[in-house]
Length: 573
Image (cartoon, rainbow, N blue to C red; front, top):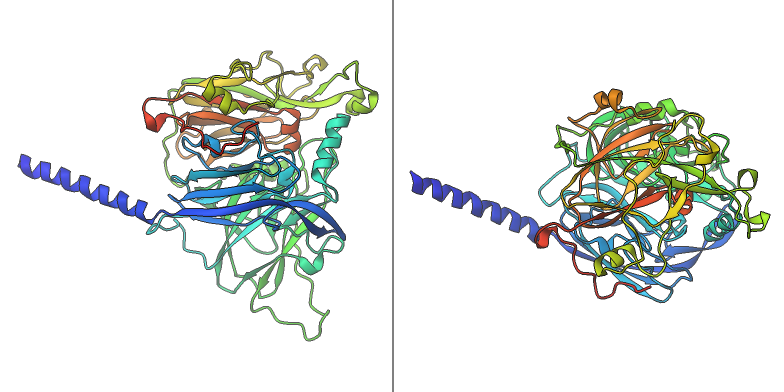
């Protein structure tokens, strides 16, 4: 009997080994080349010299399978420094390929190149890539689609066709000039002039209708729309006239399907929705416009459209007589109730292993601030409210990126003086976060402060919005990790009362959490990926002002719990 047991153990072991070898055999190494270059791009009647990848705007869509390895050689032929971030990729032990400038690498200088190498492990769905240097991601971005491994399928009926829907933001100016001017004046940057769907503003803007994006569908088909909010500074509502959307995934994690007529994505977030061709064959507008939760702040209040076109839609007898596509109604720009109902519908498809027995219980405030005008500044450099300069912070620390080394390099090589590890785990001053805040708390300290985590520690973070200057919905993104969003709410987080709201059964897994305006969100993850990982607001105006921090996750034991050595072509500062 013992012999039989031994034999069956050996047989099962061999079977598992063969299965894993087969899945590895199906994994591919995909090689791509990204040339960063200035390209003439005409929008809103005007041609701009825009920074693009391979002359394309948006950039190329990368399609891979779970388990594949990507090698992307980035050649910088533009006049700006550049890096590329693979948004949402876990980058297990490959922090050198994560991409944020001066965090995991020095920038690729004009004329330089760098090859990003990383493996996709256990992720399926829609992610994206974008520049992570100044405001280049306004035009340097594209979809990153991860399909299931060979032999595996979606947990929903296979869609007839799949279409990436990239929501973007367009300035009738050079975006780099826009942010540089704001940095000079201390005021908020100029708002965008248009939103785009797959790079096109659509029929409601000047000089745009002949290039409006068309998305085909046929009667009876079920198609998958992979919606990505690639806008620089604006959460967006998205809807399709007369069609319901069934949400099946977000941030490359599956969800328990639910049906809605409108979705909201903060910058950085992705949402996979199924759409059914169940309406009369015709043309229907898809539309996106701002969700604006900050009060009295200027924003781009325009609407971008694309056309969902039934292949069997009747052709007009005469040109120019075609009926206009059907227009959907969108929520009001400040409709927080719709956003709340939407985000509270998110659940994982089944019970998940949420970290319990928390080792690190952290509380981070996020919000804006105002710096007094430095005595040596002319008043033209202090054009924020009442002669101040805008700033932003987490736990009252406004994050400053180093300039001579990347944080990961400084950590790995033990270079002193680049960062400190005294980022506060709780607010230095307790106050009524969402109430009337004293002006004395408007001016944060600056610093390059990291928070150290032991390998394998179980982490909980309460992320609390503040009403300093204005409350706002902040999309907070954590590099190198997915996390469970176990609760969210309004007002000040109250540990006595609010822990009862924690969903420890089937919370959604995300890489970017939209922290409610005047409210809070609670996330949990296990620190199982060594390296230096940026956590920041994905409204680029806020990261420019310092709404960021970084975790330093220490190595564990053995090779599989240790950051890999830096690649030989890592750019030097």
